[in-house]
Image (cartoon, rainbow, N blue to C red; front, side, top):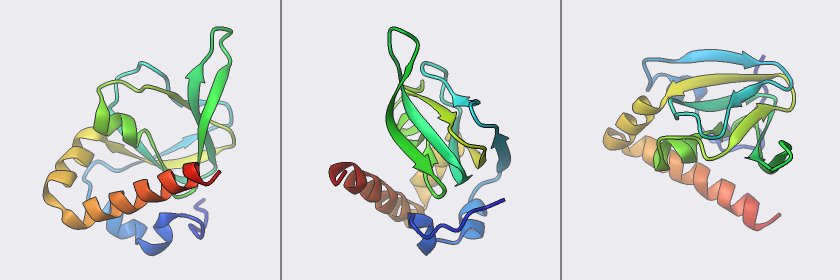
Length: 136
């Protein structure tokens, strides 16, 4: 069910340790083509992608989705929207079958207020994502 995180920041972090920091951990599977969240929906969750591929983007005038980025095993979908707003600015859908862990936005926010280790881990994740955009 879970892919090896060899190409992600999770290769240096224990998934069990991460999940142990949250109370409301929900494992969720999405079938190919299914939306994980839609643009303008209220942000209630962040999705840690365990396996599969997710496309993130905005809808164009002709209802086609314009891909902005892709998330793979070890990535986090919806994190930037959870931190910066109340609604998703983009849509995310499963390009392949996807397994994820759904974490409440409120738990993410609370953890950032009290856990420096988690904050450092998030900074590493964001740095990795920024670097991959800058280098592509």
